[in-house]
Amino acid sequence: MTEFRNSPAIAPPVGAYSHAVRTSGPGQWLHIAGQIGVDKQGALASGIQAQADAAWSNLVAILEDAGMGVQDLVKITTYLLDSNDLAAVNAVRKQYLGESRPAATLIVAKELARPEWLFEIEAVAFKPD
Image 1 (cartoon, rainbow, N blue to C red):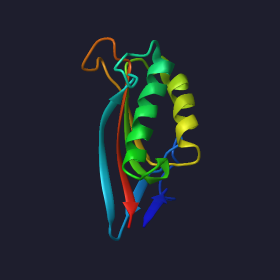
Image 2: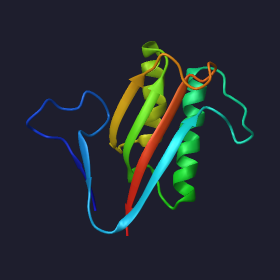
Image 3: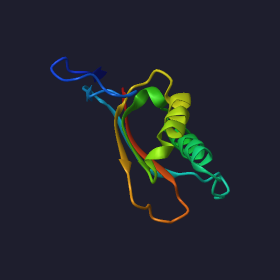
Image 4: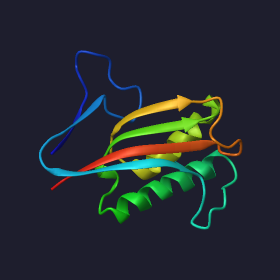
């Protein structure tokens, strides 16, 4: 079972996420490595919105390959280089997550592993048996 929780003892989430996600019972965990904005052939998309879209598309493909979907995400960590890109990144995220609200962390980093990378996302998913 997966339960998305927002504690009434603290302020509500400032965005489209949950304070915490509790899982219980038997199930399958999937830890997804950081996904960047490259297509299936390894070509890097141009610009923050295109890179975010490609990275999210890769993440969803990994979930689907494991028999899961975005509703099974319990934690995501997003990395971007420029806080001015937050609106574009959030628009892409909304397209993929819909009403799903995993726990989430967003980090504005000085740089990622390669200078041409503008966006990266990693995730953890849980699917009850």
